[in-house]
Image 1 (tube, rainbow, N blue to C red):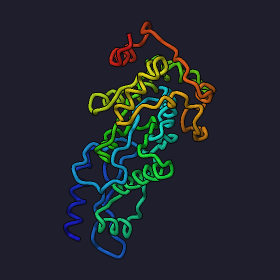
Image 2: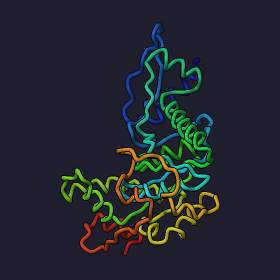
Image 3: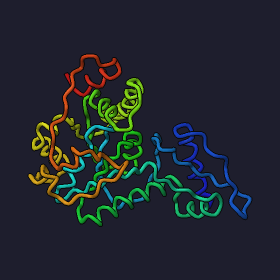
Image 4: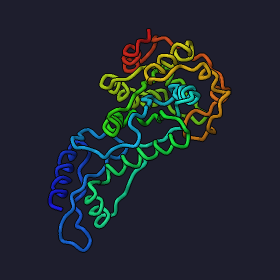
Length: 293
């Protein structure tokens, strides 16, 4: 017990500054000893993970790192039409959490070499594995926009993960946000929402090995771009991917991706184009980084 407790004390100490102030040590029920545990960050990054994790059932999942309103649902539909690729609706792994009751549960999991953070990772991995088993395919893709906020954590959980970075002209993202039926936000607020995603997306692109895909290129030259994606994922390109409307797809669910008439049409439709004139300095910075002229 002493070795295990010491290890978890070290974990908590390593993550204290990177995550958030830890909760006070909880005394195990029926015991006078204290149990040191690390608490998972709330829907954010895990910055310092310098200790081993348990083996994963899914070795190399694929994560789309993309802002909202970037065309990631179209990418999902095309990928899901491949015979080897399963791209389900948004999974929102970062908001799937584990809660251990202080005392018996924490002590029991410590004896297994687990804690709250690693149990979350085990559960995330199991969800991806279940999706693969149900689909009968061998590659799983998650395109949840919230992945931009936990890309470091995803890389830690799955060291062999692959990453697709979905880009769209910054004004295209802002314009799409503005066109939502329930939108009443100001232009300033819409830009702030977009920028919240752009910053971690660009950090991920500059840090991780992966493939960047521009939405405008995907709609203008779908065969070329999907061929590049298939090559990156290590699968043969299939022409049927471009006719995603002919494939059996999951139903469209509110808050789990685009449900517009365009995406429901089953056809790739050319994206609107924007120039950089009139962009705010913050948006212009990303337009330049993503090679929009």
